Image 1: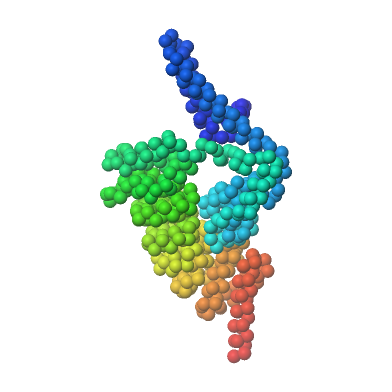
Image 2: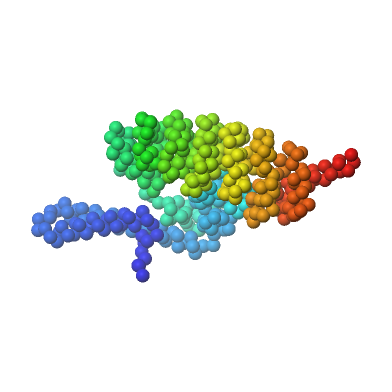
Length: 460
């Protein structure tokens, strides 16, 4: 069994400790093998040893803070429902529930569009700081003698996240290379920037300091009609990594006039990985309401819908998440309908493909009259009734009955088919009793409409 130590749970500390040990080993070998090694070698050894000692002491201090936290009973309202740990940055979701920002962002970035605790479908994914809970946590930490800056997720947050002079030098050097005219320099620098922005927040933050840095990053894709595939993939993925950082980065990236056209191009002719990451970048950028409108106007929904129709399993969930988030803005729903979303969604849902993701999009689009008309032409009522009857997922049943409710109130020619389903299987009555609260309301609305229609027929 491997031995455990102070660095075992921190990947960054592990890497630094290994590097210091390797350096010390080289110096010791030099001292042992050479008679005239000099005082400088001894100084270097002392510096490496001091650095290792400092890192070890820092980690031990964090560990003791964590041990102190674990011995104290933390109030339940201070724990994140996702991590069950004391919250570092409490934020409020649209459902009204409070989560730690790090964990709820990870949940949303995975394509989830419901509240983890209540399972409520989210009208938007904006996160609002919970200043009251943050202040209460701060007071509680001081009361038990625990510094707030040390008690949160010691393995995820550390002092090394601050931007150093060395970070800036590396950053500027890579941007010079990526914006040069040499393809090999561009490719190597883009790859390195992709890795650095994936691993560390400091490099994502550096991109957010000036819009010029994003322009330098995308510069090699601005020239020529056939970009190198690997270069395109690395630049697009770096844009995704930058956008994940915070709202100011999302705004800065989205408002750069070069970015959205490049993402559209990547969606149309990039590798599968590039197209998937371009869609993920659109999804991430669309978390801001102002970005939803800006991106929607760019014409990006059409290539997203085309990619959805293509149906590559590696990209389809990112594409669906991007379309869903964009269509939270009402003006983008008409654009999606115009660009053929209803036909593509209907075809896949009727074939039982990605029903969870796609029904949620269709439930938003059906608020547009043209979507209702297209669903009627596509025979949508029959497969929506099938989902409502046979699906084991309550959320899918809810979305199906929401769409059917809109159709029922918009197109009288579909009442007969819905009534036949009710007579044969009692699907709508069952949902009015056993569905989610929203599904029950919509199901009861349909039943009321059918009863009124029957009364009018008998009276006539």
